[in-house]
Length: 224
Image (cartoon, rainbow, N blue to C red):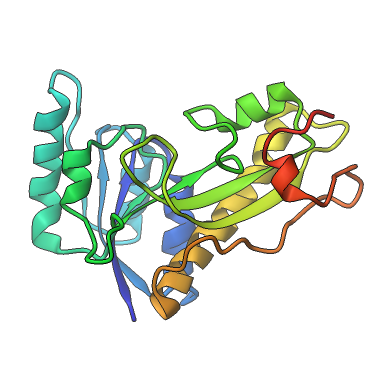
């Protein structure tokens, strides 16, 4: 099955770019109907137009959340997309918005990527908090969105180890590479097999990192 997607972004949209590249290279059987941003100056919009993808932007400043989401829904409803994909969209979606995308099986057709092994380190600063905590293993989570922040059924996780000489920037850079790999792979799995919960990928851990193999323990925040 070929998926139809709407991608929501707020900034440069590196995960959006990874998805568009995967489609262009036929690694992902999907069509992006629109890229939407709450920031008219988001670099992601120019990138999307470079791929001949339709774009739209509605600034949220000065608008109540409900009013902004209704304007967004007016853009999305006619497109009848299979999934809304959050690729660095820095807005919390309301239950009312999510109900517009409720699947008959009960989940919401909204997918997010988060830079930690959830449930560890939810929120807007997953990389920073994991690094400051001193984890030996961190990772990436792709999950279905629900009414709670960085919550909902997990579709896949991929882990990476913290190196002894890591800086925050090198730590984040290694995580971003996994984000760009994992997100298109999860979407392709949905295109082929439908939504499957709790599918953890093979962990990716640097060979010289003193990482425990028990990722369940690691995801709780194991200090170095």
